[in-house]
Image (cartoon, rainbow, N blue to C red; front, side, top):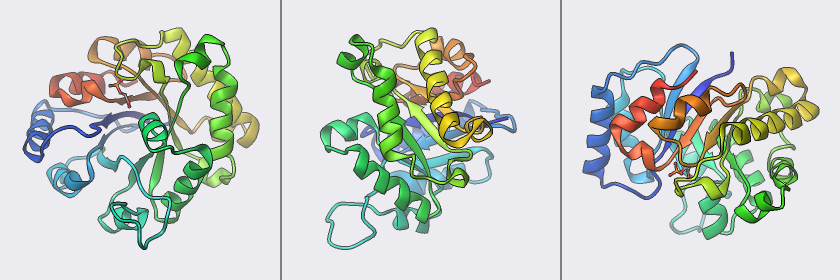
Length: 253
Ligand code: PGA
């Protein structure tokens, strides 16, 4: 069975002390994950090492970076490379979040480079895609998302696509309290899997974890994660509250 994943995206929130407290509270909540389930914490760069230390001795709990540079190394002040992340033992990196696409002008071609450099450095990308409201309103979201996948991911080999992680996040649902309906989520996730299948074959497509993101909370997680093609969630706001995120983890299939 493909992995069921609860991924937290802390974004640019929390001081170190608050981040440590949140982690302690989550661990105290007694999270239990089955063999094919995992939780990944997308924490700010300065806290990666500290939070990883806190998770030592636990199982199925991982830390992710929220971004990495498309460049290998050199004169890029303020950037963090995939090689650096690998050198501190990290395994996951979020790539292509809609906020970075919007505020940092990251386009599909740049994200393809980031995905490659992540793989070259032993990092598994958690690749985000999803349409803005005006695209949804014209009902062209399927081709929009297909183009994102095509231009950023479809140069990858079947071996790289195996067990890949995609997060579908309709932009109109992020931080708005407005969640896609279970049907809307399932429809898009099934579409993504079908597009993957036509490119890589059904067997590979079946191994890809497709997470839903956009106002996931404890109250709606079980319904959304219960959809056949939804393999967990990428969670922003609700991941900052220990009891909420613990309940979201407990909602995984
Ligand atoms: P949200 O954010 O859960 O606060 O809507 C999701 C995300 O941006 O990954």
